[in-house]
Image 1 (cartoon, rainbow, N blue to C red):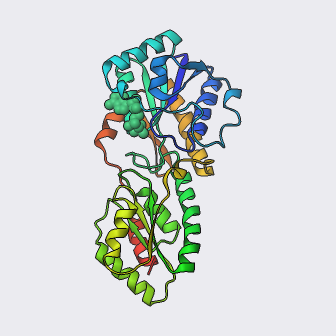
Image 2: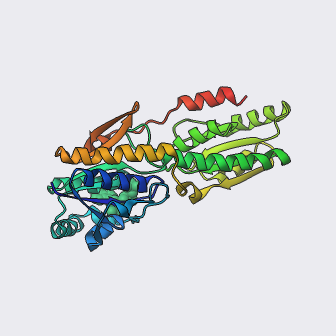
Image 3: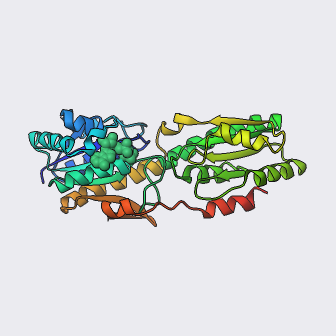
Length: 319
Ligand code: ADP
């Protein structure tokens, strides 16, 4: 193996740049050449590929987003698209790839591996919804961003004695809601992984009011329902002066936290080590603070498990 390609695909996440930097520098350190591929699989097929030097990745570690850009490119799910991508790999003399993204991006990486081009996946998504890793690159930053907003919303909630339903991202996973809920001192956390009863939530809010609580913050994972819908249902149980806030895409941006930068740096360097070892079709994880890798096929069968202890913890802390 002489030449590694690197691309970011699917939704962007803070820390992707730190991962690209780590892959590039580790590979150069080992005497390999590195090529950046813009716009994920779309750029691969289009041949939007260029050499990366050590200085190309300088001043990137602290930046959010991905300087290689990202794109959705459904055509890559078809063999025709994959073969076009492989033509480009041949043309540029790239033997192996690092793919930073989520589940969909891993499918593309596995197809390339099956065609003889080893690809290693790094979990880059704010949602933390990938199996076999405790944390994904970008999650910690997203949670920090959510906390900043919750702290601000709390000020106005307290001043007006209002209930706020704050919808956070996470796709089908409740991780952002769980972490941000506990860290933000929310009264209620609502996630897809746990059943809930809006009538009971309304009762708890009423009891909290009676005890003199000035604000009520409900952190709602987007995978459950929209904040407006939740608020309408809640308001059927009484006048909660409820307001719905959807935090939206601010959660995807911003300078990565130290944790995300370190995670991305460790994983990026490890990806190069695995490729050098002849591995492909595997995805990297951080489990119990140790770097691990798993076959992508096992990953597709596996189920991500959020830390539901946080849910129970919050119940006892938010009384
Ligand atoms: P994520 O990687 O965050 O899950 P997507 O599901 O949008 O995001 O996937 C990112 C890209 O990966 C897609 O736009 C497509 O180019 C590629 N991809 C998704 N599914 C497949 C598949 N089944 N086979 C090959 N490539 C795929």
